[in-house]
Length: 198
Image (tube, rainbow, N blue to C red):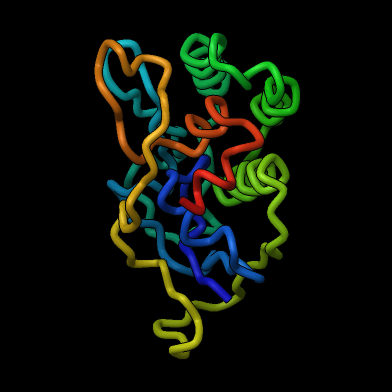
């Protein structure tokens, strides 16, 4: 079993390298939201540098609630903006067309809570990668788990060596390590899992 914070709308590549072979991935939805973390953000490639996409929160960064209670601020057009950024960045990538329709549905669905959006995104990537782990959620916060359980809640965000692969704008800006899994998926398609395994 692997315990993770229910963060990242689309987790980075090193995160997936650590959870892809787990039998159960347990989302700690009882932990408190931490500002300035990747719980509501993900990074994709851009023409000039990486682009940080952020899901706006109802009370901004001043959340003093458990992850399951963090609400999304849906009055703006954040989903349209995220989708446009993804399309403009990846429309020429080798496998974007293969995933476009199902991913677009995710951005056309309204979510009230951040954890529901994050779970939907995790499930989408899990299906795209054909991974078999079971996604579960905690009911109560547990400070420490037994030693046979991999606890990634406080792990360094880039704690695995990310494989090198061709990126859309690599010729202009060089290789950007550990972007959202979307970057690797759109470039490598079915070979993504093999790349994650090294």
